[in-house]
Length: 250
Image 1: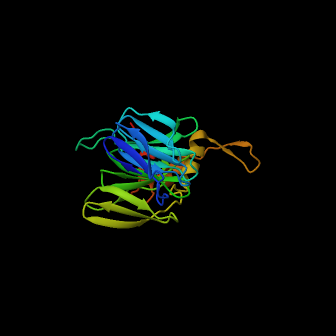
Image 2 (image 1 turned 135 degrees about the vertical axis):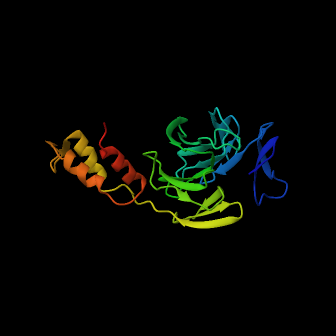
Image 3 (image 1 turned 90 degrees about the horizontal axis):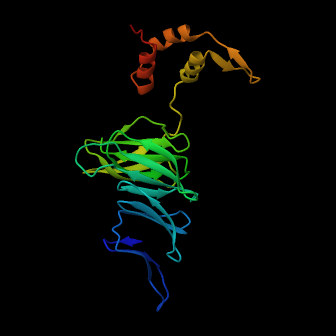
């Protein structure tokens, strides 16, 4: 697939002599990003105002998803049932929040929005379709869980420069991240980083829990748990939240 300011084409590699070598699917539209579905049956293109999904064989438009901001990145999920669009939210040098939107391809409805604190450079599904990796202008990458729309890792610092592009290995174990003047290979940890005390805290606040037979049991452990959380070591996001939550307030 190739894009210019006036035309988007799907090229047929190895076309027989005398047969068309390409299909023009759009004219007069400047496109920013493009990608194919894993089975090569669909082509996705994006612009300042919309995402378009075409049948790759015929070039026929299948879906059109309007946007109210420019799209910096796009990708199909491995099963071809969802797409993502990465919205930087402003084309300026000032860091502004960006968003990754996950769409249901059949209904063209939003399934999730992954909010970022800074300008968003790109985003992709992992090969298993369960996670999304995003790269931001704050010089970090992040991994998100698709179904919960929550981050599953802390931010990974890249270098002294912002990662503007990356590629995930086919086995989903590594990501190659490119910044100005540097390339980094990073592992993709998908383990849930949430601490063991987090479910306890939810039960303590609710003063209830489910026993082994699914019955609700009353609890009164909040004060005891507060003392444990106040003495937690470390300085990660969860630990800082715990200290804030249990702090005495006037």
